[in-house]
Image 1 (cartoon, helix red, strand yellow):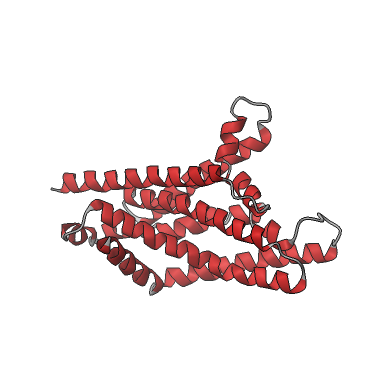
Image 2: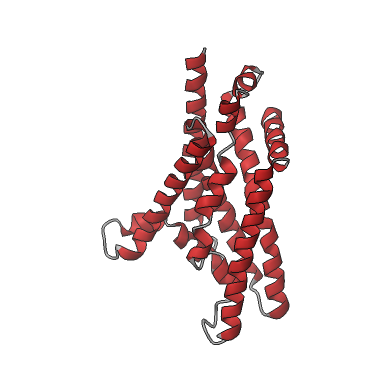
Length: 250
């Protein structure tokens, strides 16, 4: 466990001293701020629209403004985790140190979850602003953040896996984008394949459906199980990829 924490600390420090951290975080703040402002303006102009909805409840997964940007920001956050180590040649000294592939993968993954939390921490300001000028269901907000963390659990795990598979950051980012995009499209199928034999499967995979449930204040264990399961599978294969690479280099 100490090795995992040491690798995570190393990764976090190297990330937050790099320009990409501030580029990604600034871009996300601008995007989320504009999205929240647009929703607030809409509800201010249409106070009778959706009596149970508020700008903050719609902000958390009520529109594509929530999901589409994540397909770009997550690859930007995870692409360098392992791929950059391979490109720069620092992966060999790291793996020859007294650490295991499991420690490396989980250390990188733990760091990625810190990046994910850093991405969403500023959105607490939107909750505060909404509470100052309207009513906010704090239970629904808390459930929404549980859903967001659940998404991060498996989004970041997929990013770690793609970074382990890829030879450089660009390929890692593209692979992560493609995989997350594919999962997002599967979720959309649940909206258009009504009465289909696969409707229940696509609904279970729908990140949009997951957030719709959490934003209503309902903490459903099924999406959480899905998130953890996908993350476990992705991390298992990431360890296997690292293990096979080390055997090939030996």
